[in-house]
Image (tube, rainbow, N blue to C red; front, side, top):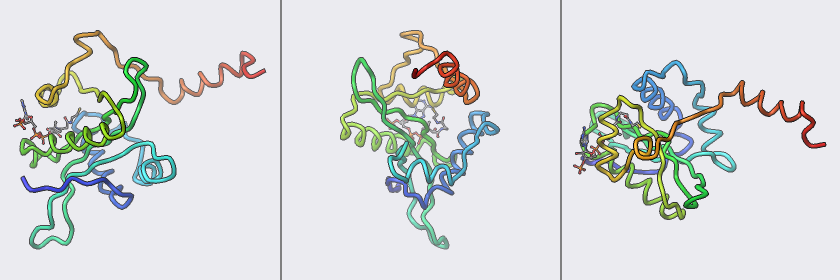
Length: 176
Ligand SMILES: CC(C)(COP(=O)(O)OP(=O)(O)OC[C@H]1O[C@@H](n2cnc3c(N)ncnc32)[C@H](O)[C@@H]1OP(=O)(O)O)[C@@H](O)C(=O)NCCC(=O)NCCS
């Protein structure tokens, strides 16, 4: 299917925010989205950006004034003490009516190209247990499930616990 793959700009953040809400709803996590397009703009397009984003865009169609954004891949860089530079794929999303047309593959291929160019040797990401469609898609593109092979667990520390953790060191006399 004809579509352009390009890097997102700060002008895309309003639209991107809509797609982020769509993928969160798809994962039944819609109520957990707390960011907005201003935060996206500041975090992705200011000084020292926290993430990068690639868009899939349909060309301008008859009767439309603007090209339509139909998918995105949002990613950032990290570091593995075992292997060195890695890329972390936070989101890959294709609007439902455009799925199974090779757009997800094109987006991920572009991320791979950019990440390899930046010296990364590995891509990491998570999928939901029930998302067999995504798991099949990633497996077909060469991914393997480290939760099955290495028994990893995803863990996170939320904001409140993070603040308590930061505070705890001061309470125990840190930086004296
Ligand atoms: C997962 C997702 C990004 C894939 O994008 P897509 O554009 O539909 O996928 P593509 O059309 O590029 O498919 C790429 C390859 O996977 C294959 N594929 C697609 N669906 C498949 C399925 N259900 N089972 C096996 N293979 C599948 C395609 O045949 C294609 O292989 P080919 O290029 O060798 O023919 C898209 O379905 C999506 O946005 N899903 C909802 C959000 C989501 O689950 N995101 C991932 C969260 S971790």
